[in-house]
Amino acid sequence: MADPIGDILTVISIFILMAAFLRIRGLTRDLGPTVPVLLRWRILNAYIAFFMIGYLTYTVIFWDQRQYWFELVVPAILFFGAIFVWVVSILAHKTVLDLRRVALLEHENITDVLTGLYNRRYLDQRISAEYASAHRYRHSLSVLMLDIDHFKRLNDQYGHQAGDLALQFVSGLILDGIREPDIAARYGGEEFVIIAPNTRLHDAGELAERVRKRIESHELKLARSGEDRQTLHITVSIGVAELTPDIITGEQLIECADQALYQAKQSGRNRTSLYHPDLSNPFEPTLSASSDA
Image (cartoon, rainbow, N blue to C red; front, side):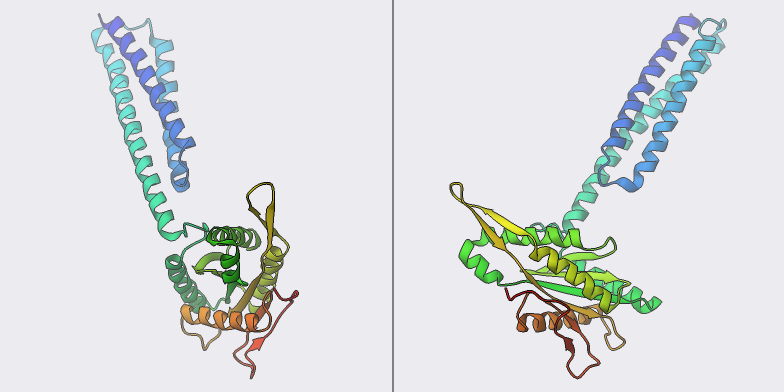
């Protein structure tokens, strides 16, 4: 009686483990935004595979060697072990779904729906954290504020849908133009802010010019009725400010960049202005500029 029961338990255990293994493999592929826990799922995956190999080895070696009833203990242990692993895989699946749900909610909470950049709420939190870090460790910190030139005119002439497309267009080019540690966010309306950690004013100005020229050199094509497609040439004005000892908050640093942005727009738009509080004229009007937009 022991032999067939043990054989049945062993075979069932192997099938249960195979199902658990495939389930965890699927979870590993579908983790999506929950990348930090990917290693743990792979470890669980390897753990199940290890048990499967052990069970198969036991089956091959001892398939016809059981003679007494107490030898049924090993297949029984393997069977309940397989059940345990299956339960773990079910709980793991529920955990992954919960983690993905939390990650999605967190992403939506800090992301601007239209542009895909970080939103104002996240920007306010991040600029405070970056200011505190720069102040504590004596690191440099710069902020760039961008504004789409003549955005109201674009909305009035082509409609708000075209304005939304322009915002998405500029946002994509900003993301392509900044560096990995930089943080880009939508400040409000047609204004954007880029936080540049460990960056001095001159280097931030070069970054601003790279972004400005990138936007200037691309065209936005609007879908129109029929076969005609309207092409828009979009430009931006940029103000740049660096953290100095007299700036006591991250919000004040953004205000300085906003003042530099105002100067850039007053100087003709489609240009970059740097904020210099130690000069009688606190602005260096431009690093480089194209014709007025």
